[in-house]
Amino acid sequence: MASDKIAWKISNGLTDYQQAVDFMEKRVADIHAGNEGELVWLVEHPPLYTAGTSSKISDLLSPNLFPVYDAGRGGQYTYHGPGQRVAYVMLDLNKRGRDVRLFVANLEKWVINTLAQFNVKGETREGRVGVWVERDGMREDKIAAIGVRVRKWVTFHGICINVEPDLSHYGGIVPCGISDHGVTSLVDLGLPVNMNDLDAALKNTWTDIFETRD
Image (cartoon, rainbow, N blue to C red; front, side, top):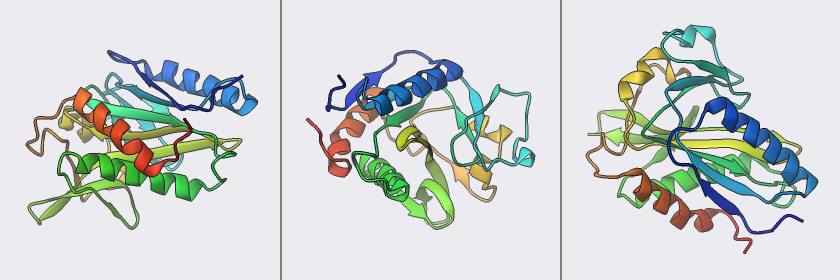
């Protein structure tokens, strides 16, 4: 019998992407069957690119730089790598209202509230998925990406927030199909934040957005 309490799992080191997808696939099936409870899973991946369902091959600028995976989630090309926190969110929308747009909006709010813990003002933009920060009032850089998939009203994939990744690795793609804006990270913004700091902030802000089920 699955517990109603949302579980949190943090994997140390680098998690193989395909293994992560396989894990999520099984967990989603188990959640739908009532055999497992909901889960937020925090990981880091080795350098790689993922292609969402809206990806254009022309946005893959360096196809041989890193492995490329067909993620099956919404969105376009995204980079994952060390120094970036990926949060995979597996929730049962059958119990939370079958509203995917609301779920995505709540993920955005979760990211924004988390960034606010470090006095970073994250914002969303019409027509641009993800969370953005203004740089000196002259440009906007992306600091977090969002891409989800829903099967039988159970969610998987989720969000990623840049803590201190190698930002040059984004040069192999047009991130999320947007070429006229850059990418940034918490450390790039001059903040001495590490992964443990971000994880604590993610947990602290979770219940502000998502209902508690304790």
